[in-house]
Length: 187
Image (tube, rainbow, N blue to C red; front, side):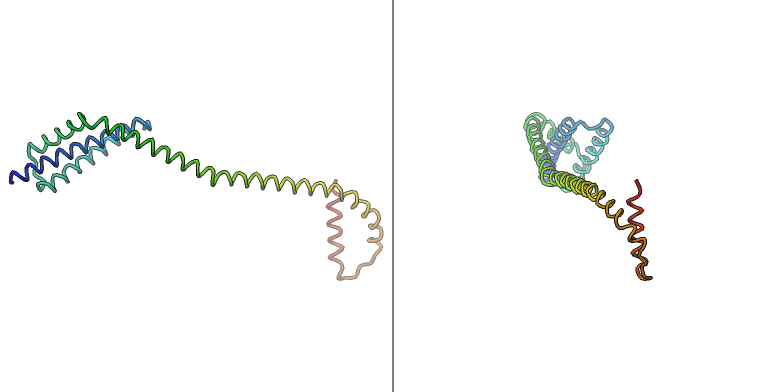
């Protein structure tokens, strides 16, 4: 392996160490901000280390066909160390600012959904409830008004209907009249 490939591999490992530091810091800030359950933090750590191993070995494979040498580990260590010395604070502030932006976007989306979808649905349900209540009140009012009129008509016309001899085709009318009469006599 040439010296040029070894230096390129070292630079790639420095960059990979820095990327590992960025992802690790970002993950810790997100876990602290959203307070994940204790058991999920261990699972996220496991996923981080699996991802880190795959990332490093893929980078290593593309830079020097996967040969592992001492300078590979040195490059990773120095890359992480340089990251934590100089870039960790900047990355932390950037991630916190990014999370605030994401939180505001999520809050605005939820609020927009409430205003555009939930609010009109609640208003429509209240209007339907009010309208049905109004129709029910009007119906009850009309029934209370018509009940005395019906009783008066029944008192006046019932003897007349009993004396009438209805033809055979009119039997259904008589059945309907008796059904209505039985409905109103239930008191």
